[in-house]
Image 1 (cartoon, rainbow, N blue to C red):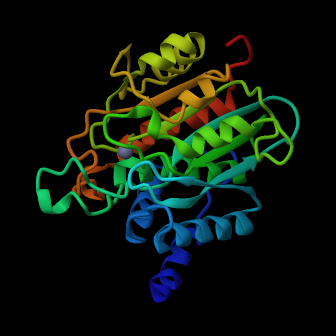
Image 2: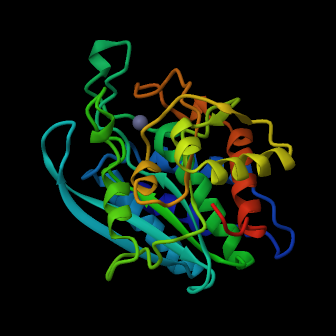
Length: 309
Ligand SMILES: [Zn+2]
């Protein structure tokens, strides 16, 4: 594992950052960041791969000048009853005062592939190419781009831990990390200095080849203006992956924020055959899908929709 890390480190750090002003979200770079996460192995809470992921993100932050904070807490893991330490990461970019926008993704992988059609595979951890690594890859590449040309407003990238360790069929046992981060927002010691950003955009399962992202109903119900604003922007940009019609209601990392009155939208394609199976691998993902999502997020930073959500 140590030799592997030494090999992987340059993949992350030796980035050919684009010139300022020639900024385009690169699906292929995001795909490299997805494959890199999967090469570490399943990033299940408490695992070595989980620790290596965090160390490598810290190395990127050092190298590129990002403000990186950790938000640690212990909790009983609903899935197996074991107490573990969970560690959210927050990368903060741009101005430290004034308006902020938040983006979120979970980086943890599910401890068990309990939806796998093969019984013997159901005790294996999920590799999480789409369910975890895809959203994380989009946010990491976004951070790289915002290193080259600073954003006009404060940007916080929330990498949630403990999203995917819930009991199947009990939605509220998921999203431990986002619950902890949302509860602390704006309080002393929280990496989220502000409890009132313009809004939060969560990206989860956005890497599937041919991704199709409808409007998530809880986002629409509790943050309708914000959700429609985000989808209207996708329409303006001609991003065909975004479908401005309601999809499947999903308890995801946006919910703890919605409950606290923070506008939050979940961008998710839940129609994924390999969901929570041993088959959630990079072969099912594509650079083109990641590029659609990243292009939208980058545009929302460059032309922030201001106020009234
Ligand atoms: Zn999941």
